[in-house]
Length: 268
Ligand code: SAH
Image (cartoon, rainbow, N blue to C red; front, top):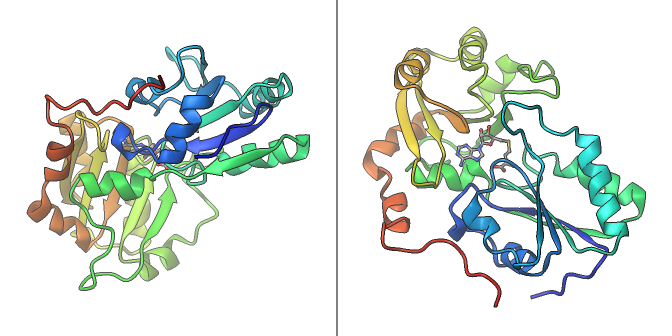
């Protein structure tokens, strides 16, 4: 595995939660980093792979306080790299999928800081697999659309042609869908999506507290409210949701047996 040179920033994805879904490159980076700057979706079992002397800095929301401004996080990465530290910027899922990795990489490039990108398994792919929802099946769909329920202002994205998207894409996977779930469903219905389309919510995917809720587009909001469904969650709409009944969550059960230590090994 590659050496992590001092003065560099590596932007890495930690996957959706289960430490077993870290890549070897991510573990290698964790084993060598002097500072790890991590987001809310990166759990303790993953941070346990950092070397004991590493500084761990949290860059997400905490205790109701707003998260640090993106600019401040970027400046911190640059500052630490200029001090000659090996800086690991660790994000949930994949850094380039709704993860602001591109913004941070551009800022590093502008500042002349050498960096590299370590992709991760995005929640919309690996997380749904653990929930028993395949993204494609040849009988149902040959395309998938990933979208976010939030734009930079925290609102539903307004730059989307919703009607065209609904017409063109048989499967939608929506990140950050919980905050405006009711408005999102109304928007999709208005755009022409039928109310009886199979729909699912998956929260805390790949973690022991994972929950899967299957319903239809018209019933999902009520079911989610009744169940007290909470983020982080993915919202999936399409025929592939029907396969969930057949696959179940056996993958999770197999990977997270109670007597199995899924946390990754600390560097010796
Ligand atoms: N870069 C990340 C996405 C960051 S946006 C990735 O590639 O996965 C944050 C959103 O990701 C959450 O609001 C939720 O929609 C989704 N998400 C991330 N981890 C998740 C998990 N374990 N279970 C369900 N959704 C998750």
